[in-house]
Length: 508
Ligand code: FB9
Image (cartoon, rainbow, N blue to C red; front, top):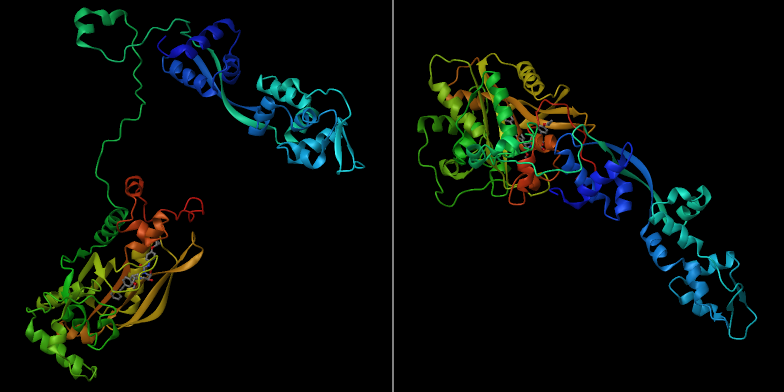
């Protein structure tokens, strides 16, 4: 029989049964694992209408592992009774027996034994009856033989209280004859071979019905890392808002574009080894637009454009130092400088999403690199109000509606604001970015017109991705410790989808 003896026995039993049979009963009857019967039911179901099988959950009495052991070896009290010789046994010795403790008190309460405390060498235990019935063992064996319902409620609850018996909910099948029921099942063909066609034998061979609902085998395909899935969503948002992507294909940047062009003074703490990765080779940037550099130098050292500047000796060598960019705002400076060269000025909206590097203390949410997302809008007469407006527009596309702005400081923007949003899943206000209006000391040396102002904001790609995917440690998302299965199984979490509850401990 194609589907093995259990299936055969099931069909024969079904043949004999009136109405149907329960898979667990059949298993107990055949003395096989219930799973084997379930397997047979499934394979017979696959043959079409041979059987009907309705899944149902039934409450069942099952012995616990201790119940199994007692059904096998007898109850503790019975074993204690049997271990007492006619001349009795020292209680201390009896207590050392494996079933000693539990068995002694039960045998005492069953009045099978007694203790004589008066004996010389300490209390001694004696039998009271010649023989006893190990009802506990018998009742447990009845359960094993599938006759639990023959036990009285009291007997059952006593065995439950002694953790020898437990009520389990078993998923069983109620099997009945199908419209194509028969006890003889011929092997169903699954392939239509050329011989069958040429011989015509396909005409009288039973074929396994096609399962058009079968899930296909997932084709092996590439998988986008969650960060890249979220990056593409941010890209989509910027493109929808009419922004153009800035070129950021240079991790190595000169101190000039990364700091000086942004009016960040050369003695600013961020410009030392502790925060920035400087390069030994190539150590210096040779190509710098010198006329623009002179204007930056003067603005830093003497001021201009209404600013008093920083009044320090600005050094070209310092500006030439190469480093790993600490923000993509360096790319914004390059693009704004190029925009300034185009006369007359045309308003522009740019964005960038790429890696930046900071020599920071590593912790669960910080690595030495992350992806910065930056938006820049250059136009006539833009104000802080415009910045707040476009931040609301931008974050609303992330499904983030409740925003708060907190005054902040950046060397290259004045005024500056940190942006906070209330995260219902985390039930707290989360900092979702930083922003500001670029300083005239940055824009005017580039050659941008007086009445042009530039608003900009930035955030990371990692933070929203970690929150969206419920990842708490950045190392689960980025780096050699990432378990690729997470990448394969990571669903495309729509950024604007309702936040899902934070992962509970066990899920974590
Ligand atoms: O991404 C950040 N937070 C964030 C963003 C989105 C988000 O989405 C959730 C789905 C709902 C959740 C959180 N932050 C910026 C805020 C904090 O995480 C902060 O602690 C860490 N920041 C990084 C820098 O850390 C040193 C995030 C990174 C950051 C900070 C500032 C900028 C860019 C990235 C900027 C800027 C800027 C300012 C003015 C002009 C131009 C650019």
